[in-house]
Length: 246
Image 1 (tube, rainbow, N blue to C red):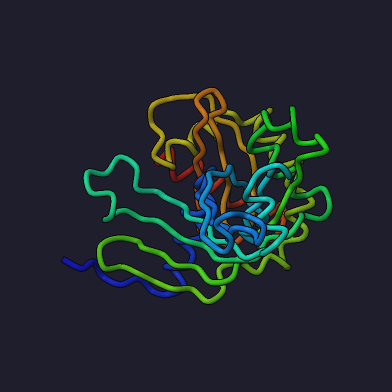
Image 2: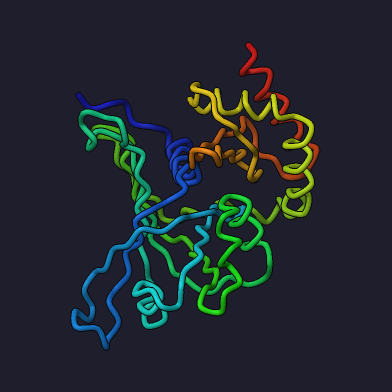
């Protein structure tokens, strides 16, 4: 049976939330001209963090085939899969994001990536590693049986949240130092009820990212309302605690 269709705006918000909740993806590039299979699709596994607008952030080696491919053709597709644990995986949710990749500018991408994957700090500054940002274009979502959507523009307009981006590091540090109990409640809201040591790794206009570094698990909780600065983020974080306790 086909499930009821989602409102387009809600479908897009759900797709972005699914994507942001994943910490790895399948990256598809096009084999470079000097490769034996020039022009053919090439798929690889990458760890992913995200900019405030939902743009995927990658840390890749210049020696990797996918990076060599990107230098020749910047077009990519990323598959974010949330079908694990299902008897029928093809009925589960997943999102494919198309876009154009380019080396990330500034320190923000580095900060967000290393907050999510602190172990990457061991090699992030090696000369043969670099941060890349994927500017999202179209995206394709399968949200369940018969619930399929194409989005012409996947990224969230984060221009109004510049103040939140500036305050993010302080918010995350404060929550982890003084409100570990609240972060544990966020994990419960995200469906992670089996314990673990959870820390907050990021807060953006649409929600907060958390991670259990001891077991390598990522999770995400979506806000009820868009946060544009530190105060509106605080309101949403408090709201999530009340929801978990309720």
